[in-house]
Length: 605
Image 1: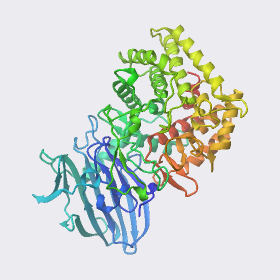
Image 2: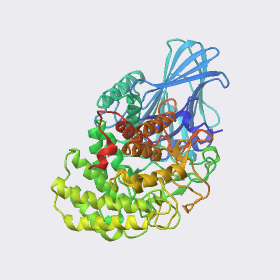
Image 3: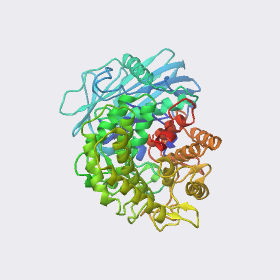
Image 4: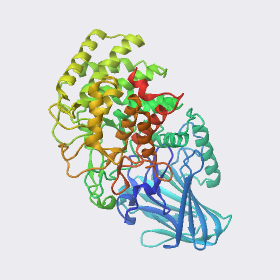
């Protein structure tokens, strides 16, 4: 039986990440990168597809308490049993040129600490490379356990005696007060010698210190500081440090509705996250990360602007073919399990506006200039001059017929608007008069063809009668003032048609041909957008109420998924979701006096 998504916590080393269940089992881990094949894939299947559990005897746990050690990604899980209490300490030492923790080897370190009593435990290590499909060759050399298959090698270091049983490595041991038992699992390319053993206890101290130093740069000092810092840590953990790319989530194929087919791979980097992410990082004091993200963006989009993709791999890879893993039954039976993402081939014109907006605000914020930035932007504008008139799949990656989505047109307007302002306010060279005329043409067309005067609302697409939560971007990007009656009418329509239990759906799946059966949960980022819109409208109390509702959805260690089911009261979608945490940071800033205000800053740029 699958554990609830919210029962997992995140650990990571800024190159990849693992999900640790409240039951003491690591059920998801891809090595050595976020998008590598998983060696633990029980999250999307069963124990036989790979897991690493350390837990008291079945049925003996009466209570579970979890927390991160201060402002870090060192996880503590206390398991209370009838005979005593044990503490699991889980972490991955950060990697990268500035980490100085234990070098470049990806490692998962688990330390079992005795708290009270004498607690018997069982360690079970089920290594299955390539998403649970490959059983490795396991042998013991020089007191270390080695597992090898194809390009992957893992080595386990522990003082506990282990033995093999049914293609699984197991150990039985007992901990008492003050006992500290380490387990260190290290990855290496199978053709290279395994890394040397390390001191797990010293690595724990250094890892906690590394995170403490990193979070000390956070400038936010308001009443939501704990939530903001935890979200920043999550964004950092989802960052691939060698390039600065930020994955949308650490997982693939966690369903948008239990048992459904809306299961996608989010271990890639989306361009449309750019502006929101830059705001969140820059306004919170993470200027290095903001600059690295901007630089990743420029490298990724370089080339033919007509071939601009909506997403790329963490190092800027363009080919992300979508495959189905038939041997995995899926989370709670939600099939298919997918790796790769076919949406990479879609046409989505909103990304041009997102890139232009992000780079414009990066310059306005004082990020160090890049000599290639403006030529890249001008090339994109040349393509968009004609491209904006074409239909596309829209930001929600519809797998139905292409349409003239309102949001895509609005973001095309943003592209030319930011180009004009780059000339007028930043002193860059370009044909501002031509871009200004294009901006006005798009604005007039959207107001004429995307507004339904009968409903007093903008619609999802030209000719549609449905609304879409993406319409909340109309005031947020400055397309129309928040006080415009058409904006107020659109917000009212979204409140009426898309809100469930105080949360916002992206659109009604029953009214939109998105090419997929079934429905989905409410979308947390869209709900943050609603709170931001309330701020712009001066409805501060309502904005605060929505934000409080969202904060209450975080799990016990402060993490959010992509979506939420208000009926079943459980998280849905890939986890943890970077965009949800970006939304949390930006809304918290907008609701806090004397802090940067992303909602108003983007509006009045």
